[in-house]
Structures are given as C-alpha cells and as structure tokens.
Length: 409
Ligand SMILES: Cc1ncc(COP(=O)(O)O)c(C=O)c1O
Image (tube, rainbow, N blue to C red):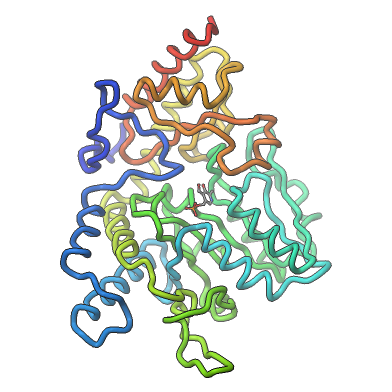
C-alpha cells in the first residue's frame, strides 16, 4: 500500500487468530499494539537494569537513571524540543493536561476569564478545565465544528477576546479523525495573552510533529497510543512556560530542600515528576520512538492517508452506512467513525468481533461531540502502521454480514 511495507511481523499480538483467522486490530486510537522491540526493551530493563532512579549511589541505579534520561532525550528529539528538560514524563495525555489545568489555570484564572476549547475535544481536554473553571470562576467557551466535521473558525475573532487566557485544542479528533486547526489558533493566539495547549494524543503518533514550528505553549500525548507501554505520557512545554508552571503533586524527587514548613522545588522537569516515576515505561517509550523513527514519521503519515482513503472508499460501497468525518484524507487521520442503518454501535461491534475484527463502539470519551453530531454512539475503526488493505477488506466483509444478520437488505 505504501513504502512502509507490511510490518505486522514486528507485532507478536497480531499473530493471534480469532475464529481461525488472523486478528484484524482496528482500535489503535484507543491503544496500539507493541512491537517486539518495545516488549524486549522492557523485559531487558527488568532483567538487567531494574533500580530506582536519581537516588542510588550504586552503579545499577546510575545505569537505570541514564536509561530513563536517555528516553527523555529520545522523546525530545522526536518532537523537535530544544532540550530534554522541556519533556516532562507523566502517566498519559490525561495527566499532562491536568498538569496544565491545575498547574497553570488554577493559579492564573479568575472570575471574568475564559478558557476556549472546541466541541470536538476528548473528555480529557474538557473535564480538567471544567474542574478548574469551577474553582476559579472562569468560564468555558467553545468553537463549533462545521458540516465537514472541522473546527469552525468563522467566529474565532469574536470569541478570542482579552478574557481568553487559555486555548486548548486537539491536534486530531479521536472520533472524526479531523485534524485540529493548530496552526490557525497558534497565529491567532500569538497576538494575545493566552497560552495555547495542544492535545496531541492522536496527532503525535500519526504525523510528524515539530514543537519548534507548532506554535503551542504546551503539548500533551500518551505513550501507549504510539507503540509504547501504558502508564507513560508526555507534557512538553516551552521552557519559559514550564518555569512558570506550578507543580500539582508534591513528594519525593521533586524538591531540592524541605523544611518543616516549606519546600523548594527541583529544577524543571523533575519538579513535575513527584515520587518514583514510571521508569520501565519511559524506557519502553524510548524504544517505541526508535521504532517510529526507523519507519519515518512521513512514511507513517503517508501510510495512514493511503489506508484511510482506501477505507473511506470501501465503506462507501455499503448501503445505509454514514461516516462521521472529513472525506479529504489530507485533513484527517485514521480514526473512522460510522453508523450502519439503525444497528446499535455495540451490536455492530459484537458482530464484527465474531468475524475477528476488533473495533470500538460508544461515545469515545467525547460526549459533547456526539451530541453535536446527533449520534448516541458510533462504531469506530482506527488504523495504524501495521494495518493493511486486507484489514479493511475484512472489515467491509464483516459489515455486509452484519447487514444480513440485522435484516438490512
Ligand atoms: C484525543 C485524545 N485526547 C486525550 C486522550 C487521553 O489519553 P490517555 O487516556 O492515554 O490519557 C485520548 C485517548 O483516547 C484521546 O484520543
């Protein structure tokens, strides 16, 4: 299909069969499968390197610390950060966004201030802001989506006034696949006092991202959606923003001194990593980054465009099937949400599973968007580097079977 070739052999779980046929895994927007290289790196860490970081005077601990910090440097390089110190390890994109909501918003927002979001956000980029708005008296305002499922910027000038102190937007929707208007918002925000936060949970795994060119102040993403393990994510921030961000968790490792009444924070990024960090997970994420760099992020993106174009084409053959998302693959990623007639999304996903096709069904943690689209639930197929055209064919074949089962003919 593209230069990426068939990399399925790198992913042991994809060797499993269901109903006597190879698994068709189409749920990578939820979490991706892991290549041998990541699994073996984590295995080797526990067999050869396991020790707590940053506190041991012995060689094993120093080696574990080096490996942990090397993973930070790899992630920094991967996103074009100026230095590893701009990379904070978190539990995931959700935790990274909460760091900004509580570490920035809570200390700067007050009554009369506004946070500008879009209706296509994942709950992780809505609920933390709602919680902080409740505590500060700030107000949430939203950009809508248009008929093409893209964020509607027609009233941006009106909404982006001096009351807006934070703008937070998804780089790519996990429901419609639509790319977020990051460049446009970065340009608009540059003339204001507001900071721009990008939820990169779907963007960073699927397209080349260079924070030097992104125009954002903060970027959040998750390791497990980019071939890495669960329990690790990243908050990137501009150095001057991280310097002004308050830590939201206190504990060991994040201080240089503690008295009975006070504490002095450690330098960035350690002040944001209280307690024992997810060491094996960070090192595993480093291996995932190595793997993606070997594939090349341009090739990853090209593969996604090609397989998404093929999927949209093949899905259009099926009567009564409605796709919720842009048609033009240049403006979207590989999360494809759809409804088939009046079949409930969960019933449809169950039938697909009986044919060895794993998809997600439900509201995809984006209830405001689902309400806006007028859908209670959708079925979502989402693609990644290991998906091939035959996976789409198997999906389409199973959808025809579902039509038969539910008497849609
Ligand atoms: C767009 C988007 N943002 C944020 C998240 C939250 O990621 P995590 O659950 O890994 O913290 C997700 C997860 O599905 C997502 O798709």
